Amino acid sequence: MEDEIKSIRILIAEDDEDDYLLMKEAIAGARFKYPVDRVQNGEQLMDHLHTSLESPKIKPSLILLDLNMPLKSGREVLAEINCHPDLKMIPIIVLTTSSSKEDIALSYDLGVNSFVQKPLRFEDMVNFFQLLQKYWIEFVKLPSSDFLD
Image (cartoon, rainbow, N blue to C red; front, top):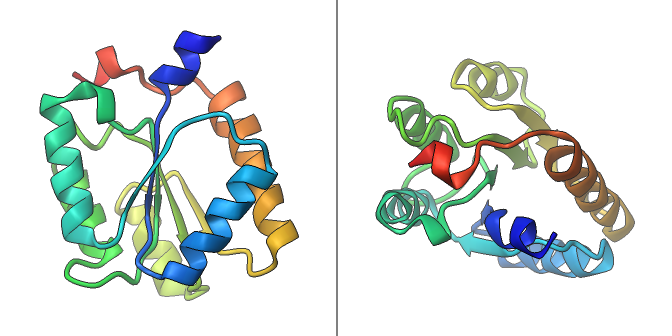
């Protein structure tokens, strides 16, 4: 189990400090067992992903992506990831304040695995991370780092 925990990494792409602090507290409240990294904009996300191709220890198993980020939006990031054979295998959950039908359709068209409107209440965010851990990590078989190399 310890090796499994070490092999799973979650990457959160979130520019809003308040939203990230809520997530961080909810992660603790959900007793989330897996390492979580954060980037604050789309350029940092792509830099992190390209670096992870050379350093598999930081390669995310799952990405939580905000659509509305500075420098490079989540939409731009999705398009870029979708064109990269070594990155498009990483599951992506859009976690955003948007409920726009256009954003939902475009996100799925660009290959996201789930589109979730950000929970605004702490209890709902805790529930989200509990469900995330249960479904995406304990039930779903994620591509391993070896597979992604």
